[in-house]
Amino acid sequence: MLGVKNAWLEYSKFSLSILCSMRILDRTSFYVALGISALVLDQIAKFWADSHVLGWSIPVIGDLLRFTLVYNENAAFSMRPQSILPWLSPTIFFGTLTIIACVAAIYFFRGLPKQDYFSRLGITLIISGALGNFCDRIRIGKVVDFIDADFPDFIFERWPTFNLADSWVTIGIVLLFISSFAFKKHA
Image 1 (cartoon, helix red, strand yellow):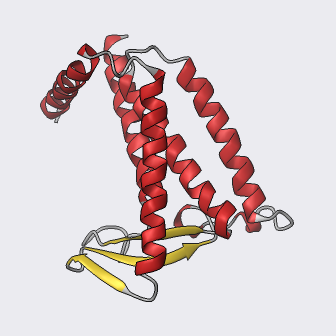
Image 2 (cartoon, helix red, strand yellow):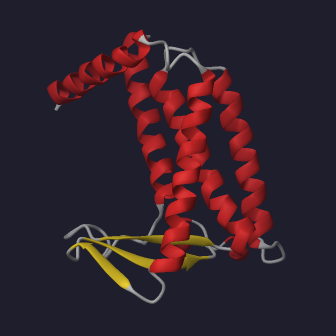
Image 3 (cartoon, one colour):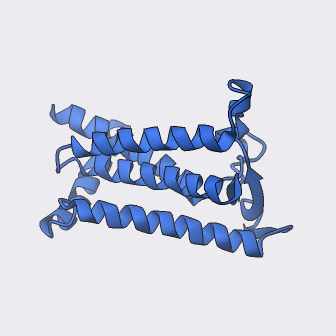
């Protein structure tokens, strides 16, 4: 397992070194463009799902992956903020949480060394994902989920339906996790 981890880190460093030689990843404008692109892609996918998947479950890869439109008024895994704060509107709750998280993430991003590409990419994707779901809450009061995946013999019968914004957040967290090991090794 350690050999695989080291091989992955070396491959990742090599891949990033190509981009770094062009000095692209050193520019904040790259991360802003990436974040906006991820946000726009998420919104386009949700508009497509909202207009083409309504009332259907479209198989993409058999039963393993399909598009099924679901509107989620709650948080991840359908957790409800009303159970904690019943007097507070979900849109205000999630809006406030999103703004605080994005401001904290931007503050953290600005303090990172330019060479910490994994963390910078991770934070960019997390912000894009948070803003993507926030746009849905502002626009329609709930989040559009449409990616319906099945991981046979896993914890759930079917994984909860999700969207690209959720994927951006997950990928961002994985990149932060990888970065914590990469920088810990060199610290």
